Structures are given as C-alpha cells and as structure tokens.
Length: 579
Figure 1 (cartoon, rainbow, N blue to C red):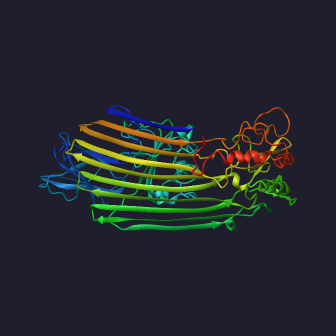
Figure 2 (cartoon, rainbow, N blue to C red):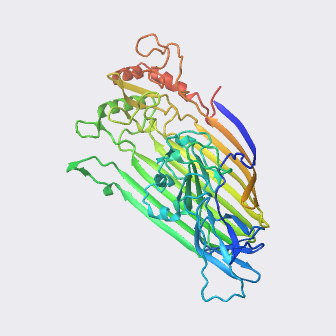
Figure 3 (tube, rainbow, N blue to C red):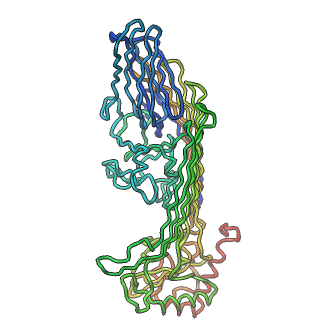
C-alpha cells in the first residue's frame, strides 16, 4: 500500500480566532510607571535586562503610563529599570519568568529635586492565580528538572507534577489528543502510530534533558495562540547561552549486578542488562551581550535479554516456560534443512540505542530585534520481539516463545530546525515570526531472510513462533512538517489585540505490506493437514500447525519448501515488490 498526500492548512487569526498550534515560548513583563503622586508618566523609558546574558528589552510608556515588554526569554534573573527626565531612576531585580508568564511590575519614580532620607521602591508582582493567566497550567522549571529523579532522562517523567497527569495522559484523554511542541514548533508524531511523541517507538526522548530550560503543561488555555488539542498542550523550551561559559557532563553505567536478586529471602531470576548513558552540554557567548550558543549531546547504549523466559530442560524455576528446548532444536534443524536460519531461541540480546543533539543560537541585534535558530536531531533504534498479541499471541512469555529472527528493529530518525524573529516597533506593536521544518524517518530492520511466519500450537494454544515478523516487510514511514506562523500584538491601553496567521504542510510517504510472504493459494500444497481450507495454516492468518510433529511432517513432505520459495520471489534484490 502506498500513500502520498499533502495537507496544507492556513488560518488567519484575529482577536479571538484560533491558532492551529502552540506558539508560547516566551514571557511578558508589563505594568505602569507613575510619579510619586500616582500620576502616569508618558514616554518614560523602561528597560528589562536578562542579567546572565546582558540581553536588553526596551520600550516607552503609553499615554496612560502603561508599558508592555513581550517576547522575553524565560528564566532570569531580570532587572527592570525605568527613567524619566527630571525624575530619579528606579529599578527592581530578582525577577524570574516562566513559559507564558505575564509578570506585573509597577514602578513609582520620584522627582530628582526632592531629597529623601530613604526611598522605598515597591512593585506588585503577579500571583500564581491572577487575571493575567490563561487557564490551568503547570510550569516545570530548570530547578525541578535538575532535582527530580529520572532514569529514562525523559521529560515525561516530570509530567507527574501536573495534578491531572497519568503518564502521558491528561484529564483522562488518550495521549494522541495532546499537542507537543518544542520551542513553539509542532513536535507531535503526525501520522499517529504507536507513540504520541517523536522517538516514542524506540523509548527515546528526542531532546537531551540538559538542553531543556522549562516545560509547561497547559490544560485549558484561552490564549488565542494555543489550540488544536483536547488533552494538554505540552511545550518545551530549550536553554540559551549566557555571558558565562557553562557546561555539564555525566556518565551513568549499570548492569544486572546492581539489581537485587532476592525477594523476602527467595532467589529470583535476574536477566542480563548493561546500560550506558552519557552526555555533555556547553554554552556561552560568541559575542558578549550579543551572540550566544548552547549545544548539548546525549548518548545511550543498552542491552537486555530478548526474553526473560527460558525453554524447559526440566530445571524448574519461575522464569521457565512450557516450551521444551528439545522442540526448539527439532524446529530449528528442520528449518535449517530447507535453507532458513530462525536464529537463537535463548540467551540473545536486544539493543536499545540512541544519540541526540541540539544546538541553539541567539542573536541580540538591538534592544527591539532578537533572532533565534535551533537545530536538533535524534537517531534511535530498539530491537523488539514480534508483536506479542497482534494476529494471535506470540509472547515471549511462559506460554509462547519466539526465535530471535522473528523480531525486528524499529528506527526513529528526526531532523528539525526552526528560526524565530522577535521584534518591537515603538511602544505599541510587537511581532513574532517563526519558520521551521521537521523531517521524520521511521523504518524497520529485520534479522530474518524473506520467509513466511511459522506458528506452531500445543494443546490448541500458540506454542512457538518462527519466521519473518509479518508487520515488518518493507515497513517505513517518511514524514515532513513545514510550519510558518506570525503573531502581531497591538497594545491599546489596557487591551492587547492579536493579529496572526499560521500555515502547516504535512507530507507522508508510507509503505506497509502485511503477510506478503505468505501465499493464499498454492494448488496442490494446501491444506497441510486435512480439512478443506485453501490457505497456509501456519501463517499470520491461519490457525497455526497443530503441533511440532505436524510442522515437521509438513517440512518433510516438501510443502514448506514450496511456500519458502514463494516468499523469496515477492521482492527483488532492491526491496521492491515484484509484479
């Protein structure tokens, strides 16, 4: 089956219009500048400085003394300063900002001719619950990301801080209904297979944990730039460089020797395990106060036993299956006799490997013009057994075991880039433009040569599985997501008007060939053991061979060789399906 489709979506947003994906990556400081008598000061200068980087954001007050500083980078600390001719300068520091936060800072300036023994500067900061918030949300800041434990180093481990979270589910909704974004760009799994987040099929986090500044989980925002979900909007913002060179490095290694081997004094089976996690992050200035970088790289290598259940040799134990080792040998020898190697049936390892990286560049052209570019990649793979339940049970468990070559490797490769331009024009207009592209390459590798599935039963229940994994025949999915958005804000007194537009284009190229190695009609070959069926009974859609003896008989009569020959002719040497 071949699917090629493009879905352009364009929407013009005005006032309360909807936006198709989250744009929140920044914060806002706003307030009023007055004199010591409470009268508003017109055209007073207001500067917000991000102290670690020296980044300046500037504007002037409007006719009512009100000012707005939108599109500020998150984190801090910030210092807000105000000046006005004939008045003393005033400032307030120690301000930290979260994703989407609107911080109210009011300053009162005193006439310079007035001499005071003591000047007290006060500011009204926005509370956690206030009329500037846009709905229920949880902010997971850098301090929480550094302090809370995580083995997987995945941001999903921190979602538990949201009271409505249950894993990746929020408010009881399936995780496919969430909207995941990275620095304001779409970062869902667009095709919707298996995992909702990129890299989820390989149990990989797509972003190095040390590259993340903050994560927000919004449940019911009424911000015009957030929509397109019914669970939660989960937005991750990555770190930017500062005027100080800073870095981190880590190495974590463990094996089964670090796993307990007893429960209440009883010995338990401890499977083989080796795991290595390592990473490095460095950031700093390229040009002080102007140009910054932050780069992060992370790697994982992990090996686990392909099955925690052993074939039965009479040894006993809670991890011994009902499948006899002698039956495995008989089936493997029969298959090797017709030229097919099903692989090992015990002691083999499954690898889970990934490497990922991110680089972010920030350029402060002026106090009112800021540019950001980010590129990130993920290269991940995970070895898996044949699906445990699709088209009948296949284990591996105490009842059913597989050969090694019946499994497959899932690959997730991602490349993503986004450019952001934030600007201010006077004291009434701000704008944020984003453009990005993300490429997803999901594919499968198989250790098996082309061969039909071999399902063998015992006492009417699936007993043993061999052959090619039926869902992994030339199974691949290429996806591309192009994103353009622009949000313009106009500040009119106490009101903010938003005019915006967004465009998204999705492209999909999918190949999926279920059961093509198994013929449905071969005159003279079917049925294999009585009855009036006309399909290969041991395949994906058949009931399975009644027993190991029935399968051995099928091989010895030459019928299995005919079916194996059919599977060799389905694809040519380049992986293309034969006509």
